[in-house]
Length: 172
Length: 223
Figure 1 (tube, rainbow over the protein chains, first blue to last red):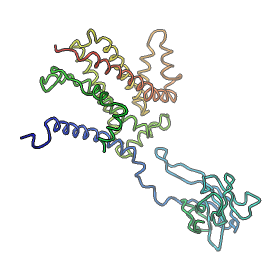
Figure 2 (figure 1 turned 90 degrees about the horizontal axis):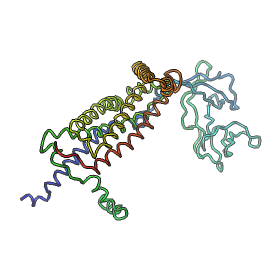
Figure 3 (figure 1 turned 180 degrees about the horizontal axis):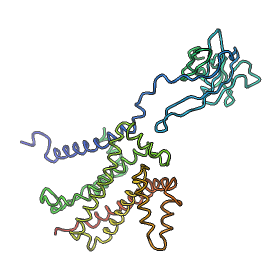
Figure 4 (figure 1 turned 120 degrees about the vertical axis):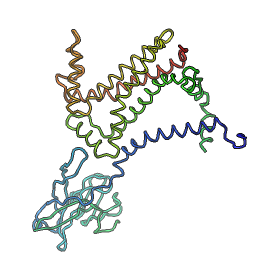
């Protein structure tokens, strides 16, 4: 009769053993795997604080470089200050702050730091070029425009926040 | 699918006999708890190994967050325990497992001792077992310092103080363990290295020898 059912006694016991063993192993490994994967599943902190960087009156139509300290939270180290810089200028009453990090491989770009290329952000690593509004010049390595900082002007002071993708220009 | 993959490997490397040699061996009736319930005492060695596997796995995962540095060690442990998902469980496994592995190993040793299973021709395996015992104690001692809290610090002070009582070379041993004149930054870095690299490495070798010898010599006969 047992032959009809196609599962031998030995096979049944093997299934039971594999099942119980698998359950034990899963119970052991599941917390460890969640423990390891946790940082990848945690949501990034929304918002971010705005930091006063420079007086609005100082700014002109020409991008100028301004350093500032930004607070980030780093695991058990808690709040850390990191030094950032921005290329800031005014255009039509609007303040624009560009991140100096090249979108090609992350070197630091400078405004007019190559005498041959007027009115361009230039990256010395691989000759990447960007226009004043951060738009990447076609035919140079970068594939995207320079990132911008969140900008807020309060009581004549310019406040900067998180870096976000450039919304002033489309990619070239 | 899995069957086909297995066959593909098996055809080239002939792994089936290997599997048979490792897993497919007869268990004598007198060590099978299904026949004599008192045979559960033969499980202690396997349980010790099982907990050792848990220790290795949970330890590997803990090092993803732990930092062996006197400024950050305590904070990193606090962080992984309270901020990371299942941190309490993973550290709990390592914490409780550390005690349990000693308990199981001790029961295993007592069984071998009172059954006289260490006698000829298994003397060498007893010696290897004793070396494993000391490796485990070393792992417990070095691991205890790593959270860098008060308990860890003073337990290590006491432990190193005891080691320092050895005649003639006590001072040398103290400095060797501390990596300097005080229990401090160098001690923590050194204990971490010993805890995660040196002792586990030695332990793997000894466990391998322990198991190969069991297989070669078989399980000792009934009392």
